[in-house]
Length: 306
Ligand SMILES: C[S@@+](CC[C@H](N)C(=O)[O-])C[C@H]1O[C@@H](n2cnc3c(N)ncnc32)[C@H](O)[C@@H]1O
Image (cartoon, rainbow, N blue to C red):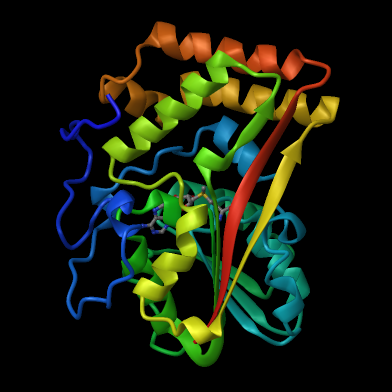
């Protein structure tokens, strides 16, 4: 099924100007001077905002999700967080930039409500609904433009990076970080988790997204027109191996397999049915029970000087 060329209902059409991520890996091309802007309505965010998804995202902090950026921040800077989700990293960054200001934007109004609630008491952070491809800001507005786990969910990550660069000040920074699903590693061996990882790739590819974004960020940033001499690529990881972390991570994914938008898209695209998804949920719970269970997620990161 993985080399299918059809697209399910609701999946964005692939065009030569918004290629699937797989097509982007082979060559670093000069950015085209014109490109179609995907609308946020034309794309369907794989995870959606089910409680199980938000529970995973709320565990994110500036330390565990923006460590590569923190040494470059100054108290008085302005920062834009694109695809901010429930805003825990955004608010943490606002704490760091106590003398500056932070704006979080996301395409989903419901998750912005959660972000605003989380930000109560902070007067240097605000949230707005916006599409990463058409940011509602003047050129050269922000000292730092940051996106965490966003580009893997876009059909045109290079277009979004160009837009991020547009709103960053000359001399400012664009900072991006994304997981890489093919580089995820776990123990004990589990045929169920292998199937889950394969299905995740099939579903995201069917909808025009690239789940192995981490390894591609350095290439995408160059395709977006950043000067390679001003890029700092790096990698970092998350690890779930304590009983508490394992329980939390296994439970989160067990629920996501049956109740999140991932489950909806897996069914819609005919890649899995309820029985298969329920089995994957059970496999996640079984993995979480293993006293020597270990799971690591590798992320790609790039700091790009504008
Ligand atoms: C995996 S979440 C990451 C949230 C947050 N950055 C974090 O790490 O916790 C990706 C977010 O990107 C948002 N998103 C997806 N497509 C978008 C677009 N075209 N423009 C703006 N936000 C988008 C989704 O609504 C979702 O909240």
